[in-house]
Image (tube, rainbow, N blue to C red; front, side):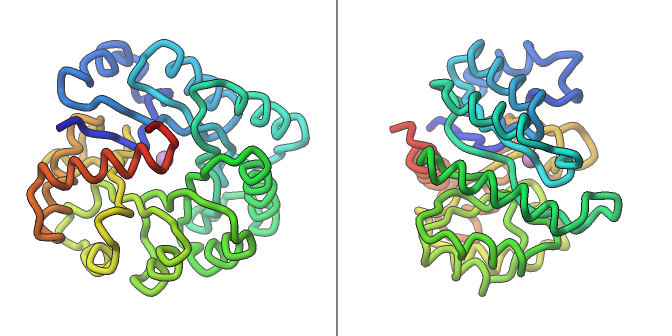
Amino acid sequence: MPIFDTHAHYDSNGFNADRVDVLSALPAAGVELVVDPGCDVPSSRAAVDLAERYPHVYAAVGIHPEDCAGCADEDFDAIRALCGHEKVVAIGEIGLDYYWKENPPREFQERVFRRQIELALELDLPVIIHDREAHGDSLRVVLDYPGLRGVFHCFSGSPEMAQELLKRGWYLGFDGPITYKNAKRAPEVAAVTPLDRMVVETDAPYLTPVPYRGKRNDSRYLPYVLEKLAEWKDVTAEEMTRVTWENGKRLFGLE
Ligand code: NI
């Protein structure tokens, strides 16, 4: 059963030494689909370049809240232009990040977030949402757009927030941290999430699962996330691999 990594940053500097080797090795390792989300205009372009080069790679394009300082009309125009590429399947990653003190002011992050949501609605694309320590505001913003669809990447909100999103059709992303001993909320979130709304992500090169925590992450470690999720949902790892593959394809219109 093939694996779909719905969120991996192979354009990142972390793969400069061996990007070709890692990406080329994925299909033989069972990873047959990857979505690489951009974080600013250059990385969105780089994600599209990778998607052009590798049949199993698709791109998302967008401006991440941590990288949105100074972003202006020309940046939104560049993102819009990239959306015309046939292998761009979503706008992302976009959202709110209140974790880092040096991030742009919250009001500015929200303006950038809303502008990209409006672009996604106009172009009928799903969004990939980054919400770090900004659960209340992220929920408030997305609820302003009833037609909006997509995934909350590495979902870290409460089970109650998950249910608000799930009843509106959102998908939730599960990543390496669900394998950590201190994962408390994730099993509660998994319990309220139906199988057909789960996707698995590496966020490579970050968020490496146990037992490789501390090393660089790549899509070949995704079986550890699939196994943990399967255990929580009381299904086989094969079944979890199959449903997350189907869900990812449905989410990104790859059927
Ligand atoms: Ni990411």
